[in-house]
Length: 498
Image (cartoon, rainbow, N blue to C red; front, side, top):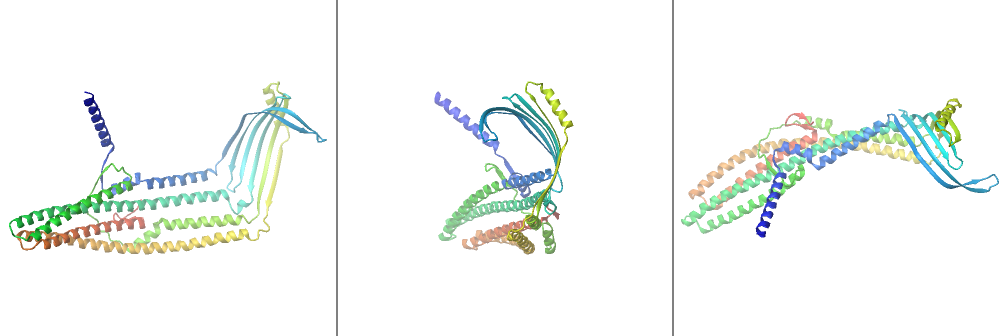
């Protein structure tokens, strides 16, 4: 009884696991467009690139926030200390005593950055110190309005340069994201058509196996009837075994390609995929001049080079500022009120006395100008400026190289695309001719007009026609996808890439 119960529990658990797996597995009916859409949402490469864009966006937001008013609050609630302190009199004698103090303070500061790299600020604070040994209380209340303005900001503005850098980095990340998105489209297209190719090759291998089984049956019947030689019957048996092996290999290759395809588009390896096997295509004729013009207008590499040049110019300006006079202009206006009394006194009265002193005490103010002038650095900064200028010139050369490479790349790609279209159209006719020829040859073999070797030759010719046509179709589709990522233009639908 226990054994039956145990087997029942195991069977129920097994069925539960199977049901759970069935629920987690999904069946995807995919064509190329839906595969690309899934990859854009689930591909780990795209997810990582989107996080790069988020990083650049937050950096830009941070740089923008530097122009806005900042408010800071500092509080000490409280700071209590008990320690041994020392006192040195006028004769140099040192006395030790115990001190016990409690401090409470708070200060709020409102600062507004200026476009000139300086800042205006207002700070207001309150401070209270309780001396538990002497039982004295000291209160201070203060408000200060100040200005700080760096002199070197007039030939290099740090806050504006930081914002410009963040803005350019954000744009550069956007361009890189779009380029990588088109690269993903191409990679998905390549994986899709590779899988489709192996799927079609499996179909071709299966059809070849079925034809070979039929031919083997015909040959066996003829041999049994004494119409063909034994060697022909044996050859058909060998061809059948080879066809079976080719079909088994095709299944394994397709499964490996399927797993790779799932990884690229970001779906689970346990999910099922059914590809659309439609081999229809649009005839796309591309003018090389238009393609080059679109590539020069849209390619992110060109804009990235321009951004790199702008960043180089900012670096040069910053480096030059290090060799110039630096200084700082400061000014402030301040009011302070203080009060000293016993800790036993009413605290509200102490606050009122401090505020009255704040109102009546004469104001404090100050203004200052400091300057630092480099006199001799033995050409250190000048050499660094020259190095930055050389880096700028180097990137200008690189910009021209990028433009020439793009022009050459697109022109060659357009030529390959037009050539692959002609080859595809030619091979379509070749498949039709090969199919008719094989049917005629198979009928002649059944009638005994030709031997098995002639039938095998015609069968290989038909298989080769299928394979070459499939390769030409995939090559044509990949050329279109490659041209789209190289020009940022969809020539199939005659529209820019969004």
